Image (cartoon, rainbow, N blue to C red; front, side):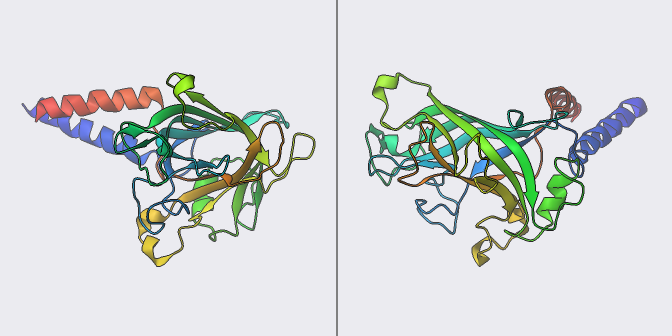
Length: 271
């Protein structure tokens, strides 16, 4: 019995240790959960979380098109000797077109919120040409402690930037049934491969979360924003942008996640 109790205590410390290990400097690649931003202009209430919050907006043909982040992550890399073609971060997962349903009926509705009838797309966005602005960075990016350093920096003034990106949406349903009739391929705005612009996408502390409604410590997060245009470089005649935030705790790597699951299951059985 004593040995079993000691084993249970050891497992508890192991689980606690692995949980605390995700804070502080990170090892690359590192993956964070990405969530729809509550302060979007087309949200039901821009000062509170609601089912109309979105992480991507692609207005087209005079219609608002917003996409809720259902299961999205952003992974950051630190490859050797990167150039303009090197992927430095990747945003991917499932997004729901909020205007594709309303009360269970497929069809355009500006007031539609996230529900089971929304049409799902697979989102992949790859970001290149990493940089930094403001006074927060002294080591050059990327580096192991940059997420903690940026989170503690001055909101809006200090930024992690990416100058180039390519975004693709792939329907998880019969494309002929799509309510969203806009392009499925987008890239950065402004800028181009020939002339990268660091202002096209950035990550900064508490982006659009400085209102008193978001005063809690749970909103000490990194917000992300960036403009997009159709990959045909036809310009940006409407609102096409990313607006999301990153969870503070990285997603465990697969091996660690599997081990945590086993430890948690064993601890449950012991109880």
